[in-house]
Length: 79
Image 1: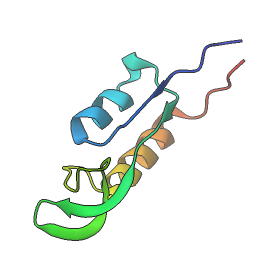
Image 2: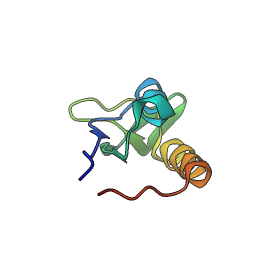
Image 3: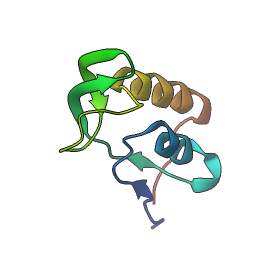
């Protein structure tokens, strides 16, 4: 079976960029969702790990980018 590749704590735009880079071969992304601040927005779902309560990546941005990425790469079968 093929090895499964995943990334842990994708809680920033730069880490998401790297995870979505085709050269990395990432199959799964793990991230943490908290209520916090991103830019001028406060008390919104952000990608962050306690005790941090700020991030440059909101949950909405992560969802939008991962969905768009997945629609262009198709599905991959493991094994």
